[in-house]
Image (cartoon, rainbow over all chains, first blue to last red; front, side, top):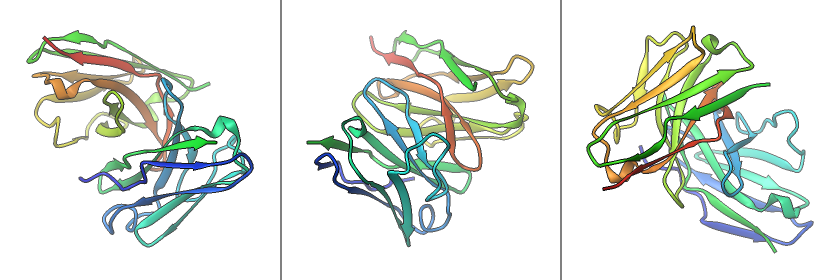
Length: 109
Length: 117
């Protein structure tokens, strides 16, 4: 199972919005509404930020939003803050297993 | 509060074995499918294995199939990963994670496995 495709890095200034894409196939992203997004700070465990494409868990800021079109999912972070600087990973369910994206490093300038 | 605490990592020689444990608390462990996910140093997350709630069904990534075995003891609220024939490329932080509706909703802090001579 090949990894989902994410940009290696994105950046933005405080207050701006950024979008991270996650491209898969019809066997994963395009075939299921089970795309999730995780934030990982250095040396820490991943943290769930978005599940089932566009749902936010309790406690996650509404600055984080998710969407999907065809085989590509997207994570948008609005009103960038310094603490948003981290690595972000997408994940999709795919017939009894899961596949992750390669990760995107978000830099807040 | 949901807690997942991994243990058992360490330094092992190529070809060696190691058993990881993941102690769960704060939820009904026997009701959830559980997974292992690993992350090589400086690299991304990679799904490794999963087990269903009663332990009767398992699945593995091709890279570990035949070498790793996932299991669970619901009486002890503990998940395991038996790793045999370890290779340098198995070096990684190993996370256990709870899955709910195809989402990794809780993760442990990870345990580092280093395969080196």
